[in-house]
Length: 263
Image (cartoon, rainbow, N blue to C red; front, side, top):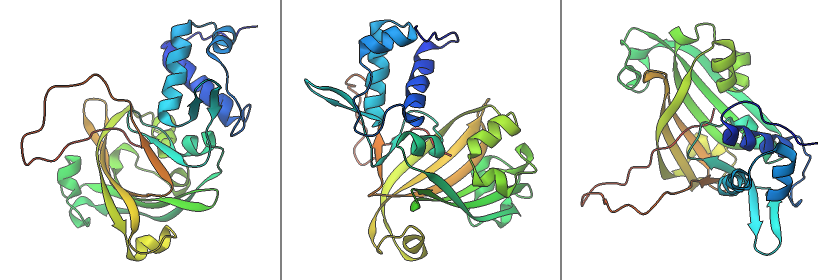
């Protein structure tokens, strides 16, 4: 009997349903995944929709395509999707790893007392209160992300350590009913040194990726600003590019890559 998709949009719903099958271990790492025809039969979708969903999961790094053989569940390294807000917990589970979070610090502070100019970044007054959060994210007990985040307190005034120890996205959308619409971010390669190297269990000078991001509520209202450090040996960043563009950056300027953020 076909599994019917009843809510719009069908494409995003199908993507999530296929991720859930991997997360729930219906397919183990290395297993051959459903074919386009099987997806059509199980979910009652067109061949084009099935192809698009499979291609998307391959682009995200969840699946890998082997020419002449089929599509298989990919394991090992975590992937970071540049196109969508995705929970770290969800990504780790899909990669068949056990996620965990160590809350290193959760405190309320005035924006003007923060180590960086968060009042300007978050479009708030200097005497407004923000939550400062430091978290270490782990996959199979291996630290892979070190996060420093400021959150506007008035949108989630009683944010607790239990909230921070889980998915912030879940807390914001389920507990506080916030409409999180996306984030602007920049990514650059950096060496990991000092205390950060110790926390991430890498040698000093090891390769890392620093993501600086501002997250928004509907209407373009900033909710958080962060600087998050990713272990270079634990993550791959995935994106799907569109058609060839003729525009080029002016001489002497840096390329600007904007995407979305995990929480």
